[in-house]
Amino acid sequence: MAELADLKTLATQVRRDIVRMVHGCQSGHPGGSLGCVEFMVALYGKVMHYDAANFDMDGKNEDLFFLSNGHISPVWYSVLARNGFFPVSELSTFRKLNTRLQGHPTTHEGLPGVRVASGSLGQGLSVALGAAQAKKLNNDKSIVFSLHGDGELQEGQIWEAAMYGAAHKVDNIISTVDVNGQQIDGSTEQVLPMGNLRAKFEAFGWEVLDMNGNDMNEVVNTLLKAKTMTGKGKPILILMNTIMGNGVDFMMHTHKWHGIAPNDEQLQKALEQLQETSDY
Amino acid sequence: METLSEPNTINKAAMKTYSFTEKKDTRSGFGAGLLELGRTNPDVVALCADLTGSLKMDAFAKEFPDRFFQTGIAEANMIGMAAGMTIGGKIPFTGTFANFATGRVYDQIRQSVAYSGKNVKICASHAGLTLGEDGATHQILEDIGMMRMLPHMTVICPSDYNQTKAATLAIARHHGPVYLRFGRPSWPVFTDPNEEFIIGKAQVMTEGSDVTIIATGHLVWKALQAAEMLSGNGITVEVINMATIKPFDGSTVLKSVMKTRCVVTAEEHQQNGGLGDAVAQFLANNFPSPIEMVAVNDSFGESGTPDQLLIKYGLDAPDIMQKAKKVLDRKTSQR
Image 1: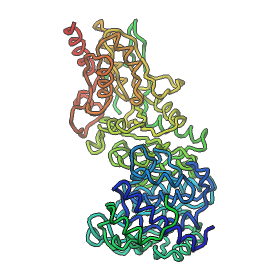
Image 2: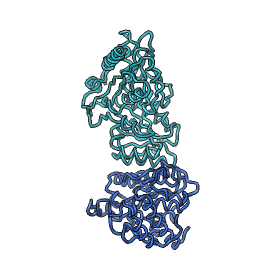
Image 3: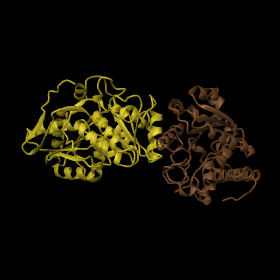
Image 4: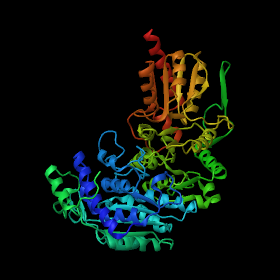
C-alpha cells in the first residue's frame, strides 16, 4: 500500500499524463479528468484489491471499478498504466488510430482494466449494480466501485438504478459522483439545476457521504470509511466535491476545458505548474 | 383464440407433410426453456421488467428466486444490470415486450451489451402484429432491423413453441449477445420437439423447385399453408424456416434459389430492415433473383385480433400465395 506522499506524487504525474495525452491527439476531456485525479489515484493505490498483472473480465474475488462518465478516460488510462495494467508508454497512443486507448473506454480492444464500454452517459450504475449482484450470487465478498459525473445524473437511467440498488439492498457497492458543477453547456446550475443531491439519494435509500475530492488525505479516509459501511443493507454514495481542471490554473473553475485540448504553449504552461516525475 | 378456419394438415404427395394437434404460444416455449435452463445451468439468471406472467418467466422465478431479478418498469436499468451480471460469469436472460426490449433501450444494448461483447440474452415477447388488441404502441415491427444492424448481435425468431424452447436452450450454450424474438398468440405447433436448435442454420421445411418462400416466426406456418395452396396449382414450393436471421444462412438460401430462381420472404415486421431486406441484400450480392416481400409496408399497426390484423396488413397465407404467383410471373418474363 502506497503512503500518502507517494499518492500525492503519483497524482502530479497523472496530471502531467492527462495534459500530455490530450495535447498529443488534440482532443479529449482534460477538465473532468484533472478533477478526479486524487479519487482515481487513491482508489487504485490504497483502496481496491485487484490483480493488475492477471487481469480477467470476471474479476472474481477482486474489487471492481466502473467508470460511468467515460469521457474522463485520460485519468483512468493514466492510473491504470501507472498501476501496472498496461505499459505506460501506451498512453501516447490515446485517441490515435488502432489504439487500445479509445476516446471513450471500451472492452472492444481488450485493454486490461476495462470491463464495459462507457461514454453514452447514465449506464454505468446499472452495470455496477449487476456486477455487485453477480458477486453476491458467487459469494464473493469484494466490492464494486463506480464513478459518475454530476451532469450525468440528469440521465433517467441513473435514478432507475438508484431505486433498484436501495430496494434490493445492494450493499456491496460504493458509487461516487464527481460534483464539479460543470457540464458542456455551462454550469449545472445554468443547464439543469439538480437541487439537493444528498437529499435525493437519501430519499432513494442510499447511505450518503461527502468528501473534498481534491484533498488526497480526505479522499483516502472517506473511501476507507465507505468500505467499512458496506454489507449493512444499503448501497453507498459519495458526493465528491472537486474543481474541474484542478492543478492547472487556467483550466480551473470553468466548463470551457470540459472537452478541448491545450495547444503547445498551453501544454508548457500546464506542465510548468506540475512538477516533473517520470513522464512516458 | 378462436378456432382458425384453416386446415390442420398440409399435404402433397411430393411435399413433406406438416400437421398440428395443438396450438401453443411461443412465449410459453421460452418459459419452458428457461425453466429447463434453471435446472441444468446454475449460471443462468433471469431479469424481468414487471412482465413475469406475460413472458412466462413465473415458473423460473418461483423455482429459482435467488436467480430471478425483478427490476420493475425500468428496462434501461435491466439491460445495464444484465451486462454487469455477465462480469462474474452469469448468463442473464432479460424479459420484456419486444418494443421495450429494443426501441426503448437501443443505446443501452448498443453500448453496454453489444459493443461491450456481453453474454446477455435479450428475450422479447409480444413482437409484431399478432400481439393484437393492445395496438400499435406495443406492436413493434422494427425490432429485427434494429437488432440485426448491431455488429455481432445474433438475431433469432423461432416459428412455434417447440422451436422457441429449443432456441432458448441453444442461446445459453452460445457465448455472446443474442436477441430472441417470440410472441403472444396461440399458434400451431408443427416442428419436432426433439430437434436441437442450431444457431445460424435455416431449415428446409418442404422441397420444391418452382419458388422459394423464406419465412420467419409465426409466418412460417402461413408459408406452409401457402405452399399447400400453390401445390394444388401444380407449383412446388421450397419453404425455408429462417429462424436465425443473423448470422444469415446464405448457403441454404443460395442452394435453394439457384434451383428455384425466385423468392418470396414472409415476416411479421416492417419491410425496411427485416428478413426480406437481409435476403435481398444477400441475393443482390450473390445471385440476383426476383424477390417479393410479405411484410408490413411502412406503416404502424392497430388494434384487432391477430387473425384480422394479419389479413388487413397482407401477412396471411393467401397474401404469400399471391406474392409467389407474382414472383413466378416475373421469373418467367425474365426468360
